[in-house]
Image 1 (cartoon, rainbow, N blue to C red):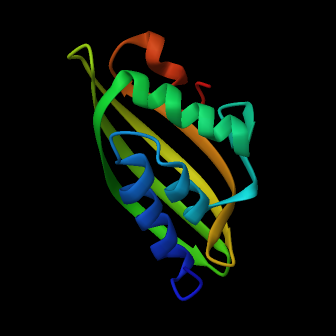
Image 2 (cartoon, rainbow, N blue to C red; image 1 turned 120 degrees about the vertical axis):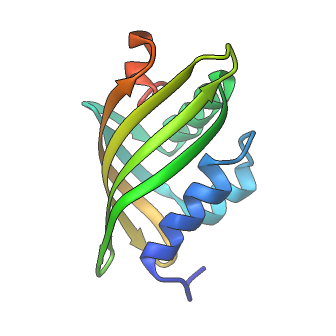
Image 3 (cartoon, rainbow, N blue to C red; image 1 turned 30 degrees about the horizontal axis):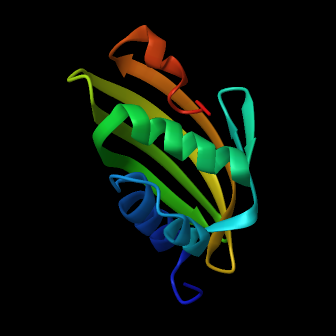
Length: 132
């Protein structure tokens, strides 16, 4: 992992963890540092909270795609502006716009500062970016 650019780490994290049908702890450990802290929509998650967040998402989301509108790398920082489209297990769909600033150190993500806006879908899903 240390040979990958921070940008590539983020792309691979989205593909291998967020796009996976279930939570694979060994994959999470590969990409996310145990000291990880995420601030999303006014909620702070530590590493165990992030794992629980992934599990809660996988309980309701059947599949998800991410369209990166912009991605900028500056040293350890990767900023993304992206659209998430998800099919829920109940058959409904959601779309959300996400702006996130990731910090990648030694090949793993150590932090994320994120804002998520639900563009379409059930209003009860406004918290899917931070649900845990």
